[in-house]
Length: 403
Image (cartoon, rainbow, N blue to C red; front, side, top):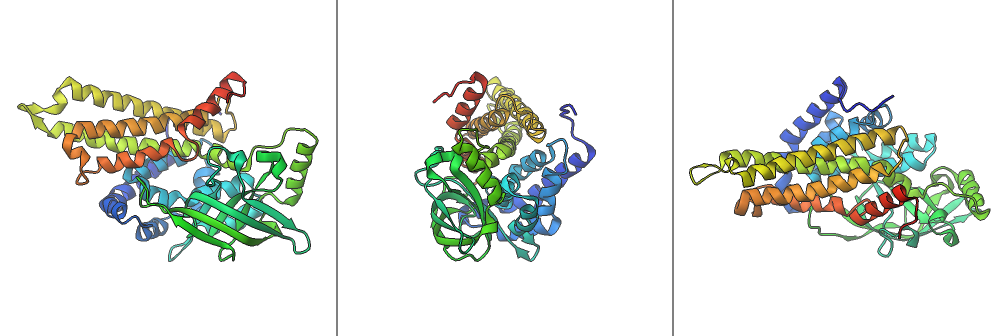
């Protein structure tokens, strides 16, 4: 199957469906939830009611789509509505992706639905990898997982930080160190079931942007989970560690498996924010008159908008191709990282240009572009910073371990 950038009829319908939800449900309340800095439960509930928030939609969009484009298309429209609310709706997807990347079929069927719940009984998922001293440097992770054979339990201890839905989620996916001497190759992922003792929320962060999305520390204090909560199972882990002891290559890091599969999705989110700013600035430039004419008639304004349109199209093209390559496991030159890096830069730049086009109005909260600019910066930071993406790409294209 060759890459085809054209959307099929089902994808066009999903695009229109999500756009309508973003326009009618998200945008009217986006500013309010940004100010409140709280999880927008009524919006998530409505998303669940129509089938947008739920494991069935995730399964259909991610697993049953041979093109890989359905999820990026939906995410672009959702984040066009608002990034903070969009992340609140899609934040559970990172936990689901973590389970899907490392878990057995049985574990996926058991735990992914519990990341979402159902209308009237909402549940959340959280994926916890970053730590206070181990953000980009995943190998520096300190959270430990120790197996107690007598009780067939894993005991988790440590602190995770910058976790979407951290502490309020029903299902937490925790990346922890099993064999410290093997550094990142000694990591594994675990599911912490709802209501497990020893897991608590630490500090909740007040953020520059995406304020409607809950971000907090997760504290693990002698957190005991059943042995079968090790994603992939102990036999698979023991086999992987045995290969490492023999000096053979191990499989990809637990956290990296999740991040690599979700980078095109993050790129699509960034494209949605960039497009929102571009479209708003375009309409403003047509309506705003100075010196007796619309400001879009000035080259200085129209050329900025032309560049914005071009950069957004380029970012989307990279995202869609990366999503297709990822679906078919055909990455050659870190195309997932390329897509996220480009889209994040375009989001930050486009939202800044939108502020410039609106002038003073762009700088005040009465207009949404300042919020979109605050939201956009996260795409240069989370799920691998701008510099980490450059490092991944440089290593891939050179074949050299660039440091």
